[in-house]
Amino acid sequence: SLRIEESRLLTCSFLNLEIPEIVIRKSSFSECLIKGCSFKHGDFSGNTFANTQIASCNLEAADFQGSCGFSLDPRDSNVKNAVFSADGALALLEPFGIRIV
Image (cartoon, rainbow, N blue to C red):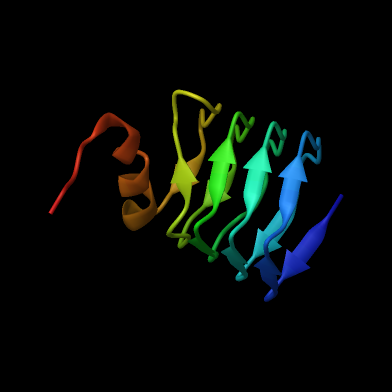
């Protein structure tokens, strides 16, 4: 398992990792790529994402409550039963060209 809290992650990549129940909380991501990973039941709550892409990941039942700024296409990643706060959930609409004002 992996646990990271209250940290700054700059220009990092998480590629093709399988870490169930990963915990990365109350941290900031900048210029990062998270691709091809399986983070089922992961805790990503309270994070701030800037210029960070999440692609082709298994995020089933992951917790993104209080997180914002991520780029995530729900057609490309498994987000079944994942939890998002209202602000974070709006990012899931961007790939469809939907904006809520």
